[in-house]
Length: 117
Image 1 (tube, rainbow, N blue to C red):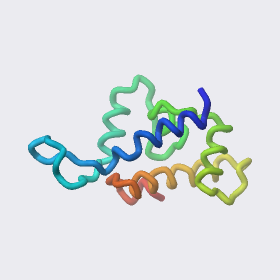
Image 2 (image 1 turned 120 degrees about the horizontal axis):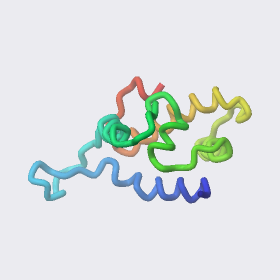
Image 3 (image 1 turned 90 degrees about the vertical axis):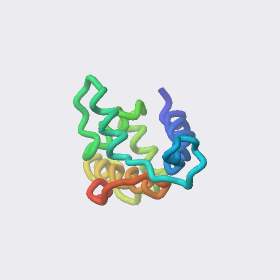
Image 4 (image 1 turned 60 degrees about the vertical axis):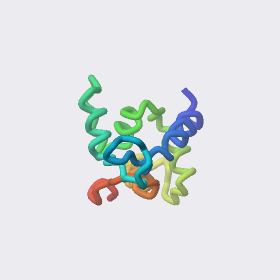
């Protein structure tokens, strides 16, 4: 699986975050934030692998069905303008986790502040 293709797939889905459905379910209501924690927790509950997606970028990418390889994470870090040493995978991974959550929030997702650290 090619990392750039995976992110394009994610980008296609990203605009859905923030589109709401009114109480009648018609979709005519104003944008309603998607509860990112609830959606990802539900996905994790159905996943046979125990994934620590709240603190691990690798597990978050796996949960989303995206390439979690080191090369893919380095490419994602470059796309998100990471200025640190990409060979320091621990520091980069922590930064990436927070940035992905921030991007979800910027695109209309409801993300608890503790997930954006």
